[in-house]
Image (cartoon, rainbow, N blue to C red; front, top):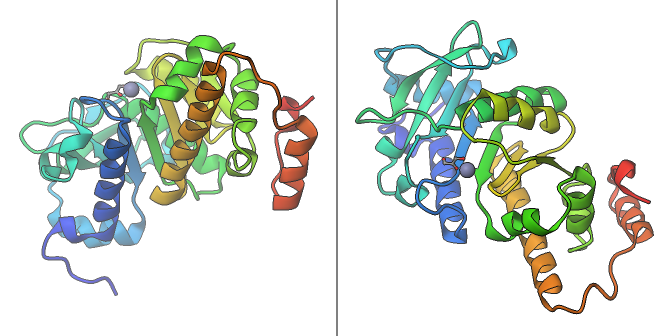
Length: 278
Ligand code: 2HA
Ligand code: ZN
């Protein structure tokens, strides 16, 4: 039995969503309208929130299609909205969209008041959900995009390959191979905000939980808000350590070896992506 809500903002999924936006803002990853967050709601959450939905707003076509996400409901940040305002102005800053039966369009059923629209990166989020749902047997529910400074800085000084970024991050903190054993993908610099970057990103997300956008930011995925936010946090912390170590100016004297990485993976029971190891 679901509890009957007096206000949709009392729903646990909305409260957790807003809390995640607030934490991202506090980390300094969301200057101005930077970053966006989407969450694929469960059937129970949709049932609980449905009394607050309206079906008056029009269907909007996307430039991408995922038939297996037809009829799903997503909580999303709004285009041009600031993470810093989500907690105090949620009804304008975020909304819920329903995907149409063809899996190629959406309509806003709650929130994004005063003419708001879903994030400009909604197509990237949608395609990332599409591939991560399949890669995780339906477990993936959260896609999160942020602009963490150290990770972005590394895209100016490291070779822009999955292998180079992954190895640098794995070797920057001992927990990394456990937290992202598949590694990270790298999307070369592209104009953001459309189907082209959405397709390039989701291609990488078939293999990885995270994809870096060169000179821009990062997309991560996960089954819930904590795990997804934690992945972003771990990646950025590793990047910060890498930047600090390189900034000392004497080069890397010693590091975690490839056999050390194998030993961590073995003892923590994760399968590390061997293609990145020597
Ligand atoms: O939402 O982060 O990539 C603003 C952005 C675009
Ligand atoms: Zn961005």
